[in-house]
Length: 87
Image (cartoon, rainbow, N blue to C red; front, side, top):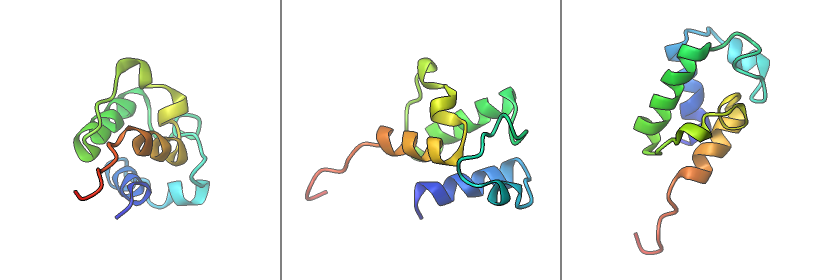
């Protein structure tokens, strides 16, 4: 399963969105559309750290990294270690 799908599943399950996210699209702002609030942002950071094995630095918790499915997917992709050849 790819990161984008896993992000969708987490958001739908944890924030009980009932398909709202899919209707808004992957560029929709989580905060502007009321999908998550500041407490929800902390839950999202914990999800990223635990599920993807990514260490999120305090200065990385920015809308440019965490405020839409596309932004979060790009952030996770950048932060995940690249497997070495032969691994």
